[in-house]
Every structure is written in structure tokens, then in C-alpha cells.
Length: 154
Image 1 (tube, rainbow, N blue to C red):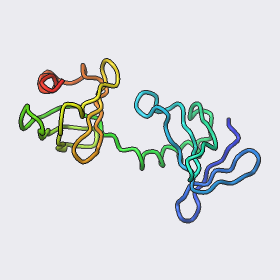
Image 2 (cartoon, rainbow, N blue to C red):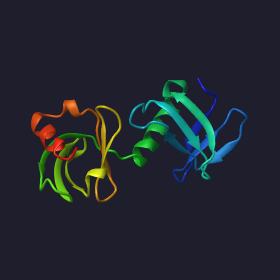
Image 3 (cartoon, helix red, strand yellow):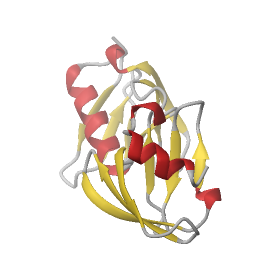
Image 4 (cartoon, rainbow, N blue to C red):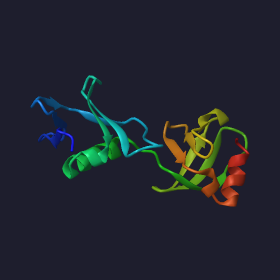
């Protein structure tokens, strides 16, 4: 176990206490690789953005610290995963997509094909007109209809 402690102050801000007893208020946990390795590589940053601690894996911290980190990251990182593409308004851009995600059904506006970014052979990150990013973790897991619609934009 790492020798660091996280807790919340009465105002909800995270406080990091390091092994030498120094306290840093308003720290922020940040994933190094939020999509490809969310359980590994977490940096604890000061309010000024300086790294105060590095956590190789969440298994290296106490359960209480792990829960605080996950709670904080969940509040800040919002990347819904698309499981199906239901409809697209047009195959030209801008196009309105109706999609099914792990957070429920929604619509996104695809401004241009450049807003679909390939992360690796199977994963895509799609940015909509409002700046929200949607993840397709594995294009091969999509149903046939969804893949056919998606192929028109790739």
C-alpha cells in the first residue's frame, strides 16, 4: 500500500496527505490513459496542476482512497459509450445521430467526419457539436445496422 491519504474537507474538496505529513488541499486525480487503462496510471495533481503523487494501480491504495479517487474521476470524466447507432439524419455532415449508450438513448450532432477519431484498430472517439465525447470501444461489437451506418462516415 502507498503511504498517502485522501479525504474530503467540509467544502467537498479533496485533501492529500503525503507520507511526510504535508497536506495539499483541492487536489485532483487524473487518469493518464482514461480509455485504454482506466485502473492504471493515476496522477494526483495540485490546484496549480503539479503532480504530487503517482499511483500505478488503484490496488496500491486503501479502499477509502480508491473510492474517493473513483468518485472524483466519475464526476469529472463523462464519456458515454455507444452500443448502437439507431438512426442518422443524413450521410452528409452535419448529421444528427440517434444513439443508444450506457447512459441511455441520446442524440449527437456530428459536425464533420474529422470529429470521428480512431483510437486503435477497434475503438473510436466521436466528438459532437456540444463538445461531448462518445466512445465506441469496439466497432466489431456493434450490430450490423450500426456498423453499416458508421461505415458511411469512415
